[in-house]
Image 1 (tube, rainbow over the protein chains, first blue to last red):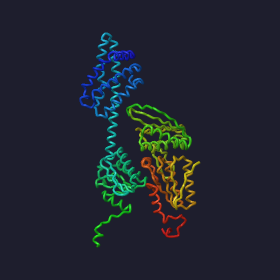
Image 2 (cartoon, helix red, strand yellow):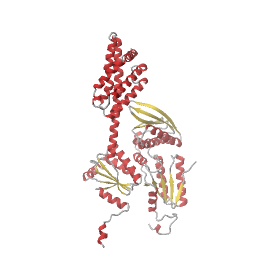
Image 3 (cartoon, rainbow over the protein chains, first blue to last red):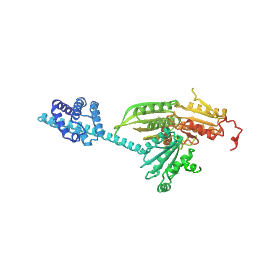
Image 4 (cartoon, one colour):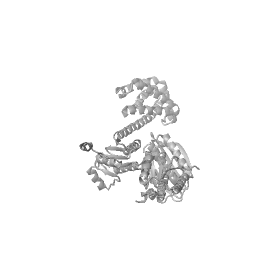
Amino acid sequence: MRMDGAEVLKRTLTEDEAAILEAWYTSLREGTSLQSGRIREAELQTQAKAVFGQLRDGLSSGGVDADAESYTPLRENLADISRSRAVQGFTPTDTANFVFSLKEPIFEALQRKLAADASALAAGVWAAGKVLDRLGLLTMEVFLASREEVIGRQGQEIAELSTPVVRLWDGILALPLIGTLDSARTGVVMENLLQAIVDEEAEIAIIDITGVPTVDTLVAQHLLKTVAAARLMGADCIVSGIRPQIAQTMVHLGVELNVISKATLADAFALALRRTGRKVARQQAAEERR
Amino acid sequence: MGAAVTVSKTETISVRSGDDVVRVRQRVRALAIDIGFGLIDQTKIITAASELARNTLDYGGGGEVRAERVQAGTRKGLRLTFEDQGPGIADIEQAMTDHYTSGKGLGLGLGGAKRLSNEFHIESTPGVGTRVMIARWK
Amino acid sequence: MDRIPILKLGGTLIVTIQVDMHDRLALALEEDLTAMIARTGARGVLIEISALEIVDSFIGRMLVSIAAVSRVLDAETVLAGMRPAVAITLVELGLELAGIRTALNVERGMALLKARLPEDGAGHGSGRDGLED
């Protein structure tokens, strides 16, 4: 029975190709994809035509199993289309409708051709539903995965942008942290800082946490890992910008920061200068002595 | 994890000597690069693999590593399974709490391997053997 | 079997680890270094690892062991040039390289060792103020 459905469907797609495609184009044209201007009609039609052909090919040898080997070209094509839709900012509905809107034209064609043969009509409709539903779902899955990837990448970029490493002086770096420190962000922060230590040949890295709202055990752990890694590479760290409330919270939580800490970035900088053998002297003194 | 995991490539490496541990590192590196892992991720999984391969050799009396390229939905990953027919671990929980005391060989590196991986799974029966699986996803 | 070469620069021994070491090579290195410290009376050991992409607990223990043995023979050990990826991984592993000082590169490492020695001599007793600690 199942093979019949695929056969019926395939024959209908072949014999009634022009009509079905035309109806599909119309439906797509009326959809919001074109109206939002994100894609042009010609491009949409080209995509539709290609998908149509691949659908027919898939039916030829794969029956109605859209996951079968013979449907691979079609699945890959739909995945590509879906991914580009996701990146271009289409809505999930628009993307899914690309596939689902093909159903109605097909049902109409089946009805036109098989009005007299009820069982063939049923088989054809069933087959079309099965295949297109599966393909529609696959399209959605790829769309969602792509969206997640975009969001992930944007998150990464935000993390990187908000953790610039500043060269305060020869061999002294500062890392002003702003915002919450979660594991993902800490990873990026750590990498940036450590690479900067190598690039700048830093001796001391000052991690300023004035802009970090809360420091709980987890955040402290992240900080300590960063400090430990920097130490293994031969650079010393100083943590600065610990607000009074944070200091209290840390003590109450039993968090021990195994690193030198200073209240302000300025204090930390002064210490770093001393540690690296520098001294800041006021010019006036020399002049006054004249 | 919702999507089913499919395996697209499998490689088995025998671990019978110190040289084999080096080979495991090299093969895992090649696979990790192939999958497209970044440098940090590469380093983490190669190091974890090195720890577990050494365990297989030192505590398991030798065994083998199965490296699989896996896929779940659109995510790609690397799954490594270390298997031996050695004495097994009686108290797994205890073994997982490692203490890398300087100079001594205490701690089986299991805790470390777990921290370096996205997935970690261990099965062991005293007198029968041990199987450890780790995975890292892109 | 190839052994890792050890260079002598004044009172310091320098080792560059570039290859993916297997057990025998690591043990040989430890033996060679120990012998050479004893023979030359070196006061400093600089281990350069900027080419090491992987440091697992075995290598870690070897490094700690070298540092401990060196100390017994009155030499300081400095580890130079660790890669960021290696540092991050070691921290995650929980491996504490206790007793080893670290430096960003060879230059800094040598400076570190020099600062700890009364003079950069051959190490067989300077006869000057070196013993007045």
